[in-house]
Length: 156
Image (tube, rainbow, N blue to C red; front, side, top):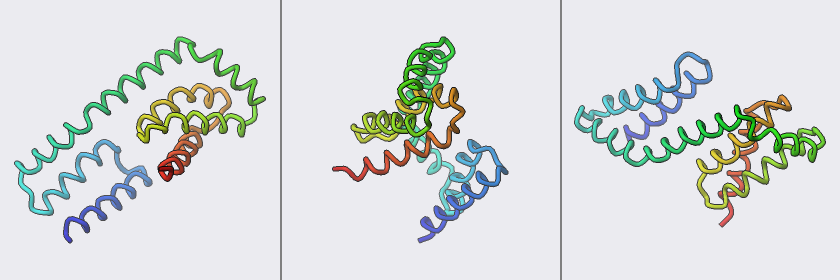
């Protein structure tokens, strides 16, 4: 029972500090779980084992994120997506709704494997130049991707 309460308190604190802008997210993701483990009576050996277990299951996805963001950043700076962005703007006739329909289509196709990080890695970096060109907020792009993922997770 204490573990569940500690978990909910940690999530609440995390959301509070992030929404109020009172802490750096990376520090919260490191400090809060360690404090929660200490409060629940786990020792240094247990915490070290938790860290090893967590890192061993997530390092490959973290490496993928690093390389994808780097790749799309370099390709965007090199102008690789300029022609595609101009074409999509022409197809959508500059309307934001048309752009979001493109986002929905790409996110739907990207989520056919059922893996949410893959969907984000395909949709966000590829469509970021388009959104910047049309002055669309990145949070709106993310919200549309999250909505598609939510719906796609209900599909068997």
